[in-house]
Length: 301
Ligand SMILES: NC(=O)c1ccc[n+]([C@@H]2O[C@H](COP(=O)([O-])OP(=O)(O)OC[C@H]3O[C@@H](n4cnc5c(N)ncnc54)[C@H](OP(=O)(O)O)[C@@H]3O)[C@@H](O)[C@H]2O)c1
Image (cartoon, rainbow, N blue to C red):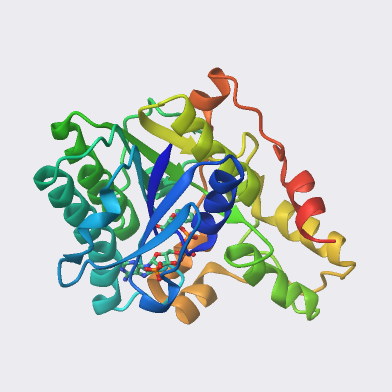
């Protein structure tokens, strides 16, 4: 199979690309960064710029599946101009892909878009599976809704659409876990708030396998891309400290302080929701890392 990936040079994209190449597929990828564009056996980079609408049309030749991961990082401070960038980097890029597929003959059968669990509102009691018909009206909730709508337009071209509602991806290379580890390693770690926020997460190896499972089984619609067992913030902090052999003696940091430091972005640390990957579990997907304990034993040695 030939698969076109946007954002292939990022955390999830690199892991997924490695898996697809290992499974003998061909990967085309679109990058905004010219120096990241390589061409070697089964791995071909093409340049695009969603801001100016520039795209190398050749990227689509022979492609069966498009995976849209590109988007500006949510871990930078959400100023009004950066909020616009967060939205536009995901939507304008999806629109550019849509225009390309609308205008050029192609054989694409499946469009898979990254998405987020931010679409689900905070709740102490709800259990969110793929049939939960709710949306959170925060900035991120609205962003995810727009992102998913931009994915749904591909159905107009008779292309199957999947929306991968992803929790925090645990990796030791980049991302949220690395940031959580830093203060604990330096003996200044602590939990956030009362530590009872339930957080959805997924191991980097499992997310790559899960995207591949969705490709192979042509799974459509919403896919909760999270491990089956979420983890409380305090439990997560404790597991990291245990793995690093560090004590936790500081009190938890209150929400009000984190709001002062991070602004609106502080909500990422206080999200509390129970999201379950019911669809893929029912279809037989087996997680290698179903619990945070197992995931962190693998990632923090
Ligand atoms: N990691 C997580 O915990 C997590 C959780 C939920 C959802 N997600 C979503 O999953 C997707 C992939 O996540 P990731 O962690 O792999 O992201 P990442 O490491 O930040 O990589 C994203 C890639 O997108 C491209 N990109 C960055 N800014 C861009 C912009 N302004 N316009 C167009 N392209 C841009 C870059 O590729 P080039 O330089 O090659 O263009 C970058 O390598 C993202 O959309 C993210 O929001 C991730």
